[in-house]
Amino acid sequence: MPDAVLVIEDEYKLRELVRSYLEREGFVVYSTGSGAEAIEIGRRGGVGLVVLDLGLPDVPGEEVARELRKSSDVPVLVLTAKSEERDRIAGFELGADDYVTKPFSPRELVLRAKALLRRGRNPAEPTGPTSFGGGELVIDEDLHRVWVRGEPVELTPTEWGVLTALARVPGRVYSRYELINLVRGYEFDGYERTMNSHIKNLRRKVELSVGKPRVIETVLGAGYRLGLGKDR
Ligand code: CA
Image (tube, rainbow, N blue to C red):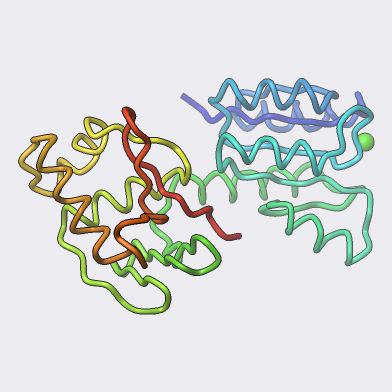
């Protein structure tokens, strides 16, 4: 199935132009002139690329991008009428993956859209380390390494599996059962009480105070979560 592209542009003629070029290339296109509707469509999922006009009448494009980013890391191609360098940089700060300045050639837009879709489908490029809690915890999945407060920490395969699972969505609570499923690839024996001892060992390596865990928090009756937010 071809990737769906969500086109958000309030100028009807421009929106239809972009739509027809993308459809000619075989893309399924959802289009809207409303930022609020775009956020709704984004939440439903199935969108492989967002083409976003920054100047929308109801919700500012920046806000739309931020909202879409909350539920997915779909690539965003920004259309901007603002050509000043400062605005371009602001565009990248809000998480735009690329931008074209109006007026643009639809052909160029299609080429850039294809490049972003290719990149989205092929996450083989190294992503670099991810930092949490203002650098308190740094995880580099490519290098398979973890640093806690600047010091490298050696983890067993199960501990690595648990920590990276919790770090997928910081703050989200994972039940023991979920964690067991997520780390199954790491030769985990599958018993819930064994999970408790893995958590205990992991805490000894990552917490300042094992008695007051802040990195791996217990949510009574529910499971565990990463207590540190992701740094940007
Ligand atoms: Ca506009």
